[in-house]
Structures are given as structure tokens and as C-alpha cells.
Length: 390
Image (tube, rainbow, N blue to C red; front, side, top):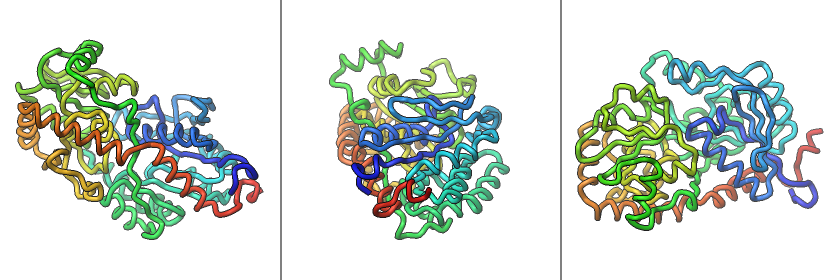
């Protein structure tokens, strides 16, 4: 399809949440939307919110359908339940779009978009972000399995292309019926201009002062939702006099029993989150069943040492394990590794330098957007557009 003949490429991105809601998937979609728009794509995001609305946000059309979010508040399950307008909105915007890009198969927004795309005949592209997420509730685990075995299987078999973030998620998608020839490894991008290292000790001191952080000592940062699968509770248990723990995210109540030495920054906007990375020395994320979390990429781009859980899914990234610390998920192992890094300034410098160079080489958002556009055009086919569907 030629833009000068058929107009700009029109893409519907579908995500259960979208900023200002805090979370990795919504941050990915936020960045994709902006970089696609910068590349000349007409982007609409279909998501949920506290109320229904259609807004223009920096050139991106954001369609929010009012949803009940009680499951996240009451059971730590990020699963919004939209109202009856969801399917109608999905059909309207799927008919408008040249391609529908659905992020993760688990959510009601994804099911509605899948149904709408089938009704309108719009090609589908999917990104599967995770495998089954461990949760303290057995019922939640059973629901996940049921959802992926039904709606997940249908999406993986229907999508003309399926993006995955690592080999574990790729195996999971293949198990749901995704065709190997339609699958593609695509790391998330990161804003390497926003998330960049401090130049020197004076700049780090200034960042600490701005965030009201201690001027002296080694600071270990956690960023994300305070949920068991993220490992925030394990990091709390690994508290040690050799370093101070700093938490960004929420909900705040999850830290109610934390020691007085633990510092809570709240939920931060991206620019403040970038400052938090620069103000700290080590990023720790002892999570379970994640791919390559966006926070890890941001920490690498920010030039600080990274400690996270070792998963087979990291194999596709060919990381230097002497420079990115991938450890067994065990409290004492975590504590000992953090103490080792905290005590060795030169090691922290080497780890940070490696992470920054890797991020610059592998995580550029413009390259990510170019890959998406190439895939969308292949899914649509030559000369096709919304006009061909009536």
C-alpha cells in the first residue's frame, strides 16, 4: 500500500490499560503509539478507564471504555471489566483500521477486539507478553489457564503475525497454536534519551536531592506494581544494612509493614522515574515468569547495575551474565548478590556501562516501530486498505 495513494496506515492498538495507569504492557503500548505516530501512522488506542472518552493525546487518538477495576484493588489481579460499550467501540474502530494489533490474549479488551476484527475482516497482529503468571490464588491460576485455552488459542491461531519477547513466551504461544512461521522475536524498546546515565557524582547527588533521597550510601531500586509475582516482598525480606531499598510504584499499603529504612517514592511519571534510576545504584527485580521486563530495559539504559531472576527466556538476548546479574529466586541469594555489588564500586560501573551499551544497540524505539510497520503492511497485503472492506 502506498501512503500517497491510500492515505496513512491506520492501526488500532488494543491494551487493557493505558497510562496514566501504571504497568509494563501499557507503557509499551504508549511508546509504540507515539513512535508509530512519529513515523506517519494514524494510531487509535482502544483501552479502559474510569469513564468513557475519546481524547487526542500528543497526536494519538485514545478511546477509553469505562470499566470496573475492583479485581486489581481487591485481589491484585490487573483485569478491568469494561461496560457494554466495549464491543460496539471495538467494532467501530476495527472497521476504521487497516490492522488491529492486540496486546496479550488474557483481557476482555483483547477478546472484544478479536471478535470485532473477525466481524469486520480486519487483519490481526498480536503481541504475547507473558506466560502463565504465578498468583497466590489457585482460582486465578485456573482462570488464566481457561482463558488462554479458549480466547488465547483463538487469537494465536488467527493472528497473521505474533510477536514474543523471549523464548519462554514463544514456546507458550506455540503451545496455544501460533504457527512458527508467523512468529517473530521483538524486544520492547526503551527511550534511551530519557533513560540515560548520570554524568558524574555531582549529578547523581542532585537527582537524589530532587527526590529527597539520602545523599550517601548505596540505593537499590524496585519499580513496578507491588504484587507477589514482581518479587517486591522478597526484596523487602532481603533488606540489609549494606544498602537502602527504594520503591517506586504501588499500592502504598503493600509497604505498610516495611522497616523504617525502606524509602517509598510513590507512582512516578516517566521523567521522574528516569531521575529515580539515575539517583540509585542498583536495580533489583526478583520477579517470576516475566519476559524481559521494561523496567529492566530502562535500568540498563540508565546505566545502573541490574539484578533480576534468571529465566530460560533470557537466552535469546545473549546477555553477558557477568554484567547483568541473573540469579536464582531465593531471598538469601538475592541479599548476598546485592551486598556484593553494593560493596564494589568498580563492578557497578562495569555493569552499568555494559547495560547502557546494550540498550543503545538493541532497544531503540524507532527500530521497533519500523519492524511493526513492516509487519502491518505484510498482514494487510499489497494494495489493501479499509476501503476494500467497505
